[in-house]
Image (tube, rainbow, N blue to C red; front, side):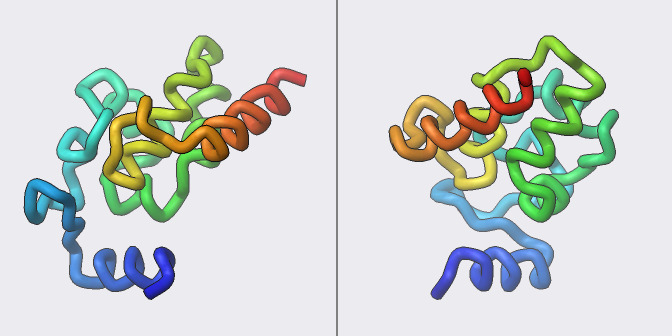
Amino acid sequence: MPLAEYIGRLLMAGIYRCKWGVINMSELTSMMNIGKEMEKKLISVGIESAEKLIEVGAKDAFLRLKQKYPSVCLVHLYTLEGAIHDIEFNRLSEDTKKELKEFSDFLKK
């Protein structure tokens, strides 16, 4: 099943499954890599739930954060991507890291 379809089904069901079981979609901090400080920042830019973060995507979420908090950096983008895919940010594939770095570098221009 394609990832988008899988996520769509989870969102419609109001749940997110991860290797630890089922978590409440409304809790950003229930996602991998998302602590209280990142949760506060995400909420401040209109991303108030894990469901919304998945819907918006890491790049758009990072762009919103960068506009309000110019000091956010590439590692923050990695953490968002990792949270969406339920993996530790430092375990992202090299291809994914490269793509995200190119996006981050583009925003600096």
